[in-house]
Image (cartoon, rainbow, N blue to C red):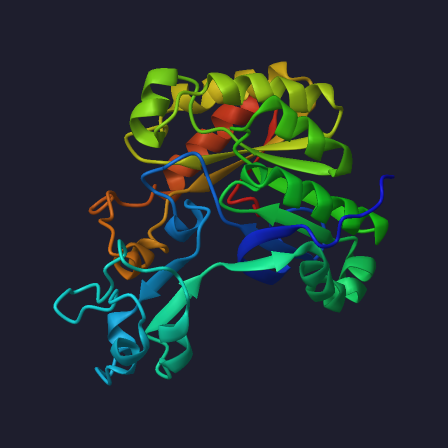
Length: 308
């Protein structure tokens, strides 16, 4: 193994401990910023840009105006409902430091591999006892390929099981640099129709499908995940098409179908963005069961939400 580069920096926006649904055992999920896709239903919109972002939660604000006093660029504007003129904000974080009611928060922090590993080490006993490990998610981990590669290498040196959750939308070089350090790939496939894929997600799917084959050729364990989105990919035909492709890869035995939810809707308000899925309801349980059965008919195991 090449010498570890522990000082390589990346942008992390969350770290979630004691996860049971993103790989075997008890896991810690590291969420990285940056994603080339723009899914309308994204539950982590703060994950899409690579840069840090200031978020404003109006329900916490006491109108003390301490943020206004310390902002060096005039980005705090009490005439705006969002309180933040993002075109002026330089993400210095000075307003966050004086916001004692937590109305202002910074989405993301620049950290070194060494700093992230130090946090992960706190949960080593859980990985060892449960057969768990580390899962990198996002955003898209492959949008920060050097940081992702070095972080995974450092985790493998520790003896931890490693997984990545990826859309597979990345350069071939980025993908190949990361795969040698991965035990499990949680592979998001959203639609087989390229035109519909672009309309809802902002990119076509040719790169994704090509990279899926590269992942399969690496001989890794792969679980395909399908977010079930009403009026986009929630028909029997939609999931059958994805299941047929997944089976053709030769390494996929299991598919997880994840019902659409609105848990991230408030984040759009915090960022001053419009939520594009207003009025869309989550799929009913009986419909999810019918999709599950359709996938099983294709010869693959299927779980709803990754847990049932």
